[in-house]
Length: 212
Image 1 (cartoon, rainbow, N blue to C red):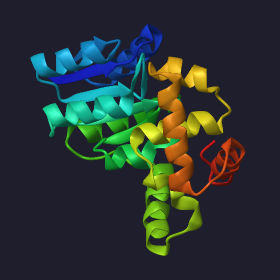
Image 2: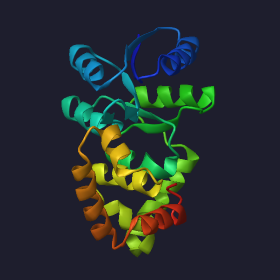
Image 3: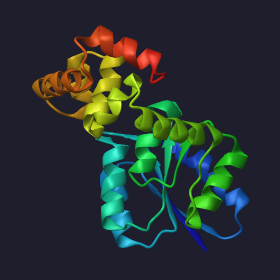
């Protein structure tokens, strides 16, 4: 019996993925959670073969939830589901312990393959993510100027992407459920760490490196 926990705040997404998995596997049990609290409760209460985790949950980054799950159950495979391009989060999440990074609009065959590999303890690395990982290693070795963002913490990186996309400070604060002052403080640290002067340079950097 394959036991999979789906964590996504959109029921239509959960239903779609659940249908794909139940059609592909003979014996499967699907659990569902819509937020961090439900997810962590189910992870603690039951034994799962795989967690499929949306990177964007209400009030909490999937990066944070991934870390909590891996802290609670280090050997439990976690596949990340995302609408964000692989270039934004894939490498960071793989390094944080994710078993793979899967786009929500991926082909059914890719979803099935990812579930098969991850539930068996392997990693699902698409060709795009594999190339990003290789480039990340090469850039670290060569100390390329386009790798300043790797010095950012997960929360700083999240705020950096929002700022680079032109999101207002108040809107970022509402989305992350923090104060505007906290976002402003993070912005100052981000600019300092990356050696940039303003939001325009953040946007230019993110565009040049393919992050937005």
